[in-house]
Every structure is written in C-alpha cells, then in structure tokens.
Amino acid sequence: MRKQAFGPCQASVIGLGTGEFGGRCPEIKAREFMDAYIATGGNFIDTARVYGDFKTPKNGESEKVIGHWMADRHNRDSLFLSTKGGHPPLRRMRESRLSREDVRADMAESLNDLQTDHVEIYWLHRDDPNRPVGGIMETLQSLIEDGSTRMIGVSNWRPARIREANAYARAHGLTALVAN
Image (cartoon, rainbow, N blue to C red; front, side, top):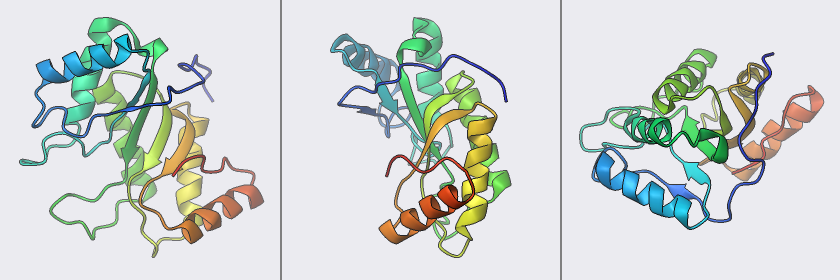
C-alpha cells in the first residue's frame, strides 16, 4: 500500500456539482464557477466519469475540466475531491459495469483525467442487484488499499443493498460504505 497525503479531512457543507462541466457549461465558464466557489470557502468538488457532454456522450469531460483547473491553480491539496464510476453507457443503461475490471478501469481513467493520484471519496454510480455484493466490496477495498481513494460510497442503491454491503464489509474486515 502506498502512503500519500490526502486532501482536507473535512468537506465543506455545500459541495459543487459539476454534471454539465465540459458540456453545456464550457471549460471557461466552469473555471469561473470553481473559482467563485473556492472564493466563498467551498472545498468539496463532486464529479463523475459520465459527467460532461451528455449530448454526445464522452466519458471524463467534467473530470478533464476539473483536472486542467486544478493543475493551473495548484490547489489539489486544499480540495475534497469526489468522483463516481461504474455507470453504464448512457445509451445502454441496463448494462452492468461493476466488474472489478470496469470499476478499476473507471478509477484509473478518472485519476488520469483529474490529474491526481487519489480522490477523497469514490462512489459507485449505479448498482447491479444481480451481482454479489461481496465482489463489489472487495473491489472497492482494493481502491482504498492502493491509495486511489480514502472513502467509498454508493449512489442509486437501495437501503437494503447498502446494509448488505456494509454487513459484508464488517464480516470480512473491509471498509464500509460511508455515503449514499
């Protein structure tokens, strides 16, 4: 396990969502929004692999905008950065993308586009109830162990599935989900 300095331990109360960055919100305007948000004392920037150009789906557009901005501002260490992966292709929403290979590939691409070696929290954007929760939790644990993220969460999961995932984590000595 590699050791690294993580960003701030505390996320600001209000986070900045970046769903349209790189799409309807061009990079120059997105930079203005991020600068204004930071100037008000915010530090929690939330993005996702699928955020950005939804008209002509291209993964990573929002992450690329944020990565360019952080590189220019040299402010990565002062941010609480959050991204999500495991989302199916927008034109094939029923497709599962929670295999170990898919999740780890999404994380690697996210870190590359964000121009960082870690995020404070990594979320799975969708669930696949047909996939055993144990394999999903083992994969998320591998992201913590390699230093890619400090915390894990889920989005669009049912409460019973979250309880099942956290029970599995407790029973197997893994990190539990901290956010939904």
